[in-house]
Image (cartoon, rainbow, N blue to C red; front, side):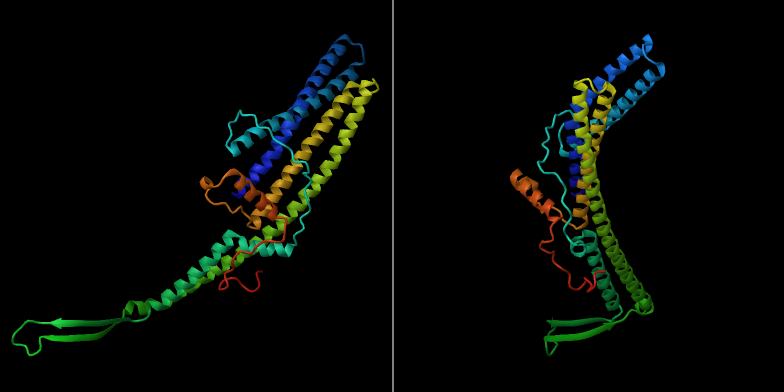
Length: 339
């Protein structure tokens, strides 16, 4: 479930980038190819310096290469999203960009994140039960060393006419002891205790791994947020610069190459902005998975779509909030110091 949520959120922003920029990329490619054809004709007619003409063509070809690489990268985004949500590969999915998509800072303290991870991590909870099972196996090994005790009681009857009493009761106690169990007892106890220590060591190692995952997830989210803010600032500057050069090109104050290059730079900045947002969503899903916050969904056959939407929306917001109902604890297994 965590992997599905993470993949859908990441693919959504990549597909949204393809939807928002596909027409602009196609128009810029067509404009660059037309400028390249004119540059080749000018070069053949030797109207200008050949070196200048070749450099001009080289810049146009480099811009075309960048645009085609972006177009190729974004072309698979819609197919991946359609595959994840169960739509047909050729179906046109109209995506709606959120009005406010700026990622917020993770306001949960690191200590609170560690507490939630230790309470909700499924692998760690499994290790608690394995430790309990190992402790029970140790007690079973000890009980197998005790002698067997059998209590017998019976109500007897005999129809022999020569007997004085035809009815009587019998009771007895039988004690048995297996010498092989006595000889192998110390080894059995040692093996059971070692097995218990192994599960305990695994649990401690898993606790440290969970804490490391919490620190890493928080670092990746904070870094992804900073990268998005930087990419967003660069996009705004490049977009304003592209609009300025476009107005200059209309007034014939800027060359066609400058206009195409500014468009390419603006497109690349926009793609990097969407990619940065996809990284933020991936990091957010990693935080959610590390803290063990999964949607509490029952049977999908009995759940309607609005209820499912509310459940997922509520859960996706929980990873950034410190308030959450704690999971039931295991008093016999949870250590006093989770570290």
